[in-house]
Length: 440
Image (cartoon, rainbow, N blue to C red):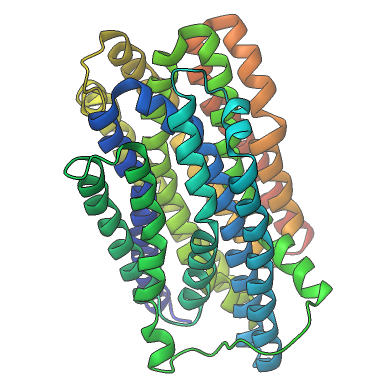
């Protein structure tokens, strides 16, 4: 492909994907804003305790969607129509199985889960309400994630972007209506969030009505090799979301001991802003995935590497801009979520913003590189990077640094961890290039 055409396709897919993932991140950010205004510090604390569960749900949906869509793109570029349909159908089977598990937890164990996540008597009931309904809406979240990925990979990146944005704006509008005029409290917040993916799914129906789709649901058994490929290729997407959830659970436990509920509320502000920033990098990664997978399928490795370079350059420019804005406007950003004018909340949040978000260029690099590896069906290095950053390194680092520097150590855990993983990712990438004679 000519360079000009490659740049055009990169910009087209990436911009639309970023807009879409930003829309998804607004699910929780809108809740944070309206809950902070309507329910104060306790509401913000409850929401922050529940958010890791959303990360688990969304991560599982992305694992299935990204894994299935990656394999779909490769098979489609190689004209393997029968396997395309089998991949799509088996992905839906997996989504139903995982959804059922989450729904059962919501029906029978939401209260126990709220206690396990750290909810005390002052916030237990509202945390339990949010968690129960969040889990019951799991089928909508997962089906939305799967369809967004498949439609984007089916040559229609505009439609998923529109669907995500419409769902997000509906969430914001419904948040206001349910929490304030209707006085539904925390239930109103989660009801608005749960309806958003349903609206998004409805918005994607034209892809089928106009018969633009090249994938179809077919009568087939669950095929072990497809299930294995889907989970393997999508696993880094799951771990990327799990890392956010596990980080929040770990940080909440540490911060509760260091600064109480106010500290957790302050971290809630930072964590929710982080969701939006990570959504930008996830959008870039998801935007390049169809292109990289297609180039890989037709053995055009040079074009795949060019797309990766564009993605990393874009990520770096965005990271510098975002951090400068956060550093300069830390106080005003915090005050947006501080409806009670709590000075302790303001001070902890503003300091945390400046330290925590030193991490953003390393986070972006790690997300994009892991997605690149999975897009060319090289799952192992993506697994290594994802597991290290999400599970193995960050937890002991959090306890170690917080023991030395208290809250400052908590805020520095994320940037130090992501920096170390970025260094490892760079070494792995260079090593694979040399070993395979520049063939990725």
